[in-house]
Image 1 (spheres, rainbow, N blue to C red):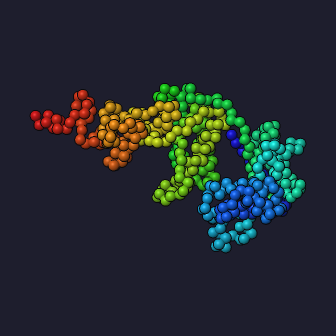
Image 2 (image 1 turned 90 degrees about the vertical axis):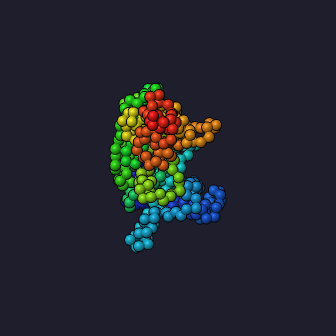
Image 3 (image 1 turned 135 degrees about the vertical axis):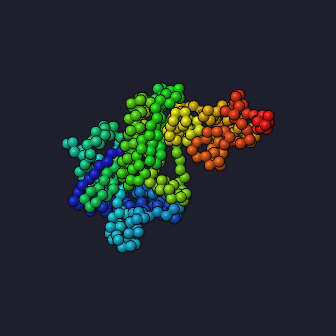
Length: 431
């Protein structure tokens, strides 16, 4: 598990550090272009960078090339604007000077930790008489020291890092003329589990503006269900949205602690390539990052020793709507969270419809599926039910099996509840 510490350094004169950061950023861009345009290998790119950027030491060059290779593997041959497209557009419109553009483009530096040296050779955190400082390697065995300011909530964590003697990575981000942000991350062992699934599970269905929660007993029965609504996750700015996501995740974790139950949530995956699927979907995909919410929830589960399980999201809403929504009087999202929780406990949802015998429902859907000689997964049957509901424009509820197949009669139309040929029913009515 990775832990992160945030801090800040201050100085009235950052001239030497600014030059180092500018050289490193330039090497980072140079290496990326060699990967993208020339398709060179890692060693070839590093050798060329060593020749071009002699002001950087070998490890600083390797860090820049490593970061560039990671960026190339993510974007491949897509166009990348270092410094941001918005700032580039401002530069073109002369709303931003060249100097300001360079400052925004050359504004960060990254240094990897070293396991052998138990720290970070190029950007090292030190402690003298209880005061933290940052020692940055500039040139050949030349160093610059800056006082490091750490918020109170991170001080204990930083002392713990010193006690471990582990390696750590450091990133510098220019904030303004006199300040740099400092981000330190390091790896620790995962805490031991203190909460598991022995007493049940919490199912969470995450949506753009709300999170549905279902508390489920160990035998799969629903105990309680509710929804956490937060519209600011969808409409707020980036920083505010991150804060609101953190607040919602904190509520879920606290509820799991109070109920002594693990958490199950969907393992959602989205295509990396952006596709225009309408204004609303594009806005949801751009402004609400499912991955960020799920990643934060997973990380908090690990940090707090809560057992979690990521389940396949297939047909959770469909199953919840047709099978549990009417029984427990739930919303569509709460019924989906109930299915997610049951799936986390290992329950398989057999095909059924509220107030109808499962055998009759299965026979009707199997007729829709076609060939009965093949073994069909239960999800295939749920897909047929979903597709039929879509074709008949039933997006909310399906209360009668006639909506699946109008050629048969069902429970409520004859005392036995068995399927009766329509001709026989018509004949009885004529008599």
